[in-house]
Amino acid sequence: MIHAHELVKSFGGRPVLAGVDLTVGAGELLALLGPNGSGKTTTLRILTTLLAADSGSATVAGHDVRREAAAVRRSIGLTAQHATVDELLSGRENLELFAGLYHLGRPEARRRIDELLERFDLADAAGRRAGTYSGGMRRRLDLAASMIAAPRILFLDEPTTGLDPRSRAELWAVIRELLASGTTILLTTQYLDEADQLADRIAVLDGGRIVADDTPSALKRQVGSERLVLRLARVEDIGHAGSLLGAPPGREMTIPLHRPDHLRSVLNQLHDAGIEIEHIELRTPTLDDVFFEITKGVTV
Image (tube, rainbow, N blue to C red; front, side):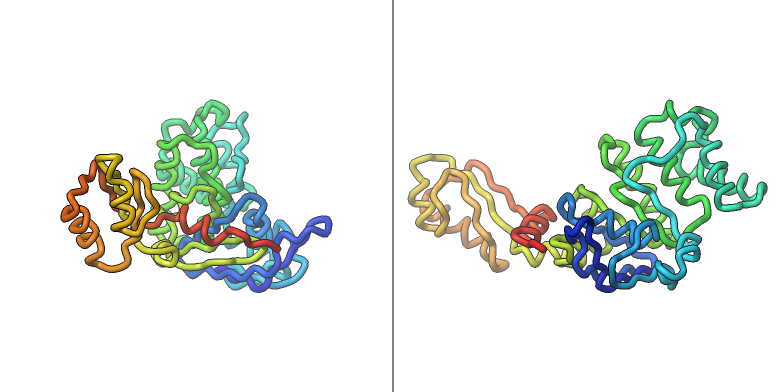
């Protein structure tokens, strides 16, 4: 549904995209991650026809973004970084405005607006000015507006930035519903837990290029194995435990686990040596580990 090949873009002589390749399959959610200034929003703007690439090519829903921009726009919905709702209009009036822009007939527009207000839990507040809405409600209204024409593909540019945890969770539930209904979604986000929760695949953009592209679990496996974190009960055991386990000395130690029986071996060694443990925790690699490992030292 989305395919980009060798996208290049510079601003004032400064390269932002240096050959981006990206593919999103039908009904898939791809999360695009990257440090600030890595080109996430620039990539979305090119794919949604709002910006022309210096070179490279891209198709969305089978249409070339440069030569068939109107057809691309008819196939997509876009929720930008900042809510674009008119705060002087009611929730319903905002959706009526977007329905008019998409040239929906009055009966179809009314049916679609009622459906979206219900789906996004805004029916009770439909007659209120959007300016009285909470941040989460405004974001849901913004997302509803982008869905007014039932697009097959949805672009979400950091949709939960600035929302409280409850509002984020509510928007996640809406995104999962859209995905379950067959919508293809390209999501940019600064929140690694958001990508972990929602994405089928994660692409990491850094240095103007895609430097990783895989499932969340596969990316975590690339970083390393599980780790055992333990805290010794007695300070006087630090030296002995460090020597025994081959770990840097300290009351709290982190031991990489390289094989299935490694955990049992570590605990048996400590037990046989009479070393008591105050606290023990098993940690798996996180997307934070993935992000910091993949993006370190990459430059254009």
